Structure formats: C-alpha cells, structure tokens
Image (cartoon, helix red, strand yellow):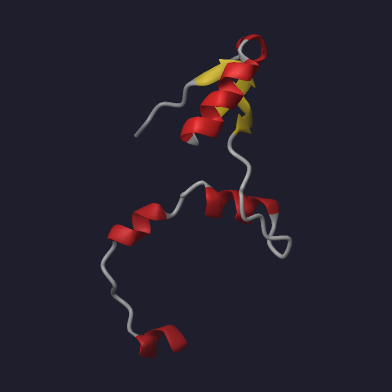
Length: 83
C-alpha cells in the first residue's frame, strides 16, 4: 500500500505554478491538506468531460482509476452480462 504524500497548503501555494506544470506534463495527482489531513487534490482536468456524468465519474474515468481491470481475466460471458 502506498503512503500518501500530502503537501501543506503553504507548500502548495509557494510552488503552485510548478505543480500545475507537473500535472500538465505528467498527469500526476497532488494531494493538498493541513496537518497531514488530505483536503483537496490537484489533477489534470478531463479533456473529454461528459456533462451527462457526475464530476466524480469524470474524474475517475480520466484518472485511470480502473486501469487495473485491463489485466483482470474476463470471467463473464455475454450471457451472464445480460442477467
């Protein structure tokens, strides 16, 4: 399990232009908070934002949160999917 690295709001403020450039170049996500408690994330804005989906659905789709599923075996058939 990966430990979260949380930038303080002061740290983030002092290097915000560099953080934004890093997000734009690498799609890395940064966590910002106070007293080591996460309060916000800084991530790249979805290029294909769907107005028909919620913000969290758009973020999950863009953040590659479910990429691990590509490596999962296909255990369902078309018949079971229809159920």
